[in-house]
Amino acid sequence: MRNQVSEARNVSASALASAVNVGAWWFTASMHPAVFVLIVLLLVVAVVVLKTYWNPTARLAAKQDYSPVRAAQRAKVTRHRARATECERIEMEARASDDGVDIPHGHNSGFETLVVDVWNGNDFTLRHRAVGLGWLPFVGKPEHVETPEITRGRLDRTYPLNGDEKHQLAKIRATDGGRIALAAAEVAAHIHRYPVWHSGVFDDVHSRVDLVSEVTSLTNAAIELRDQTRLTDVPAGNVGRDDEIVAVYVQKTELLQSRADALLDRLRALDDLRGVVAQIQQEQNKYDWLDRANTIDDINTAADAVADSLHAVDLRDRARASEAVARIYAAQNKGPWPSYGGDWT
Image 1 (tube, helix red, strand yellow):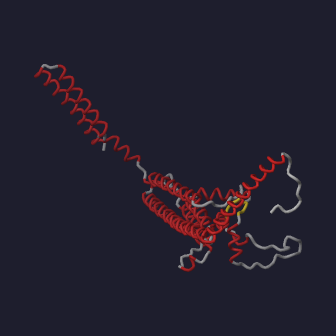
Image 2 (cartoon, one colour; image 1 turned 30 degrees about the horizontal axis):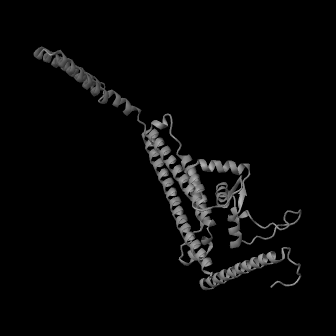
Image 3 (cartoon, one colour; image 1 turned 180 degrees about the vertical axis):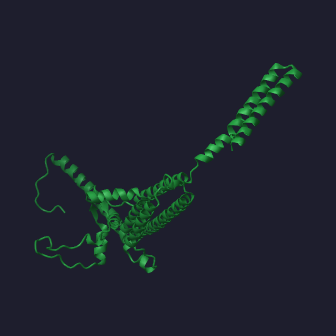
């Protein structure tokens, strides 16, 4: 390699010497100094450009500095940022798709709380259960019977997380798969809020999705992805210079990144379902409005409008007649109206 560098330098020096010789010959032959100076400048620029963009030494240094491990790390960070940006976009579109629910400060939706419970290994169904008089000493809690109403109520509620749960929520959001699971919880919460989702439309066409199972599955996949990522820590020192270890690290890193991309694709599919449900809800709102408006009978309402107009005309005629009588009486008697306690009609 050193011989190649020396040869490259010799080539550059030879090119420069040849340029000077050609310039000297041209100056001697033509005797035009301005032309000579211009040609020499052009040749010098050409040599500088050649040495800048065709530099075997720089290429050799770049080749020696290249590290497959660092390249895999850079690609991992880039793809992680792209997935985080996509999750943020999906969450923003979900929030803008409907009016949503005003969640009190410090509270989280039922689906976000579900992610935290699954991540911590807790049973989400322990929340929102009847306690009866179980808060009293020596009084047991009533036996729990899970019903669709209780399940829906558990998801409708918002939950204040304690300090440990809030800390855990931040850790979940910092992981690649956890970020996707929380975005899926946001999307699922919006699907759950649409009234049409709880109608029989999706059951009739066998297209209903178990949102709790979907969010739980994504959360478990995120936990598995987190644990697998910990197994493939970055090789350093002598280990990082072993070709076999480097090859396995690059392979496993790419494999885990592909798994994260697949989880993101599941999130996109769930968001597509949200878009369909939102469209159906919009159509349902339209039909509900038209149904309410069509309860107004056109013929009867038009007849009532004519009757009200005729009544208004009659009132105006009575008012004008009363005004005329009042003027006549005032002109003849030049005094106040006599008191009368009877019916003027």
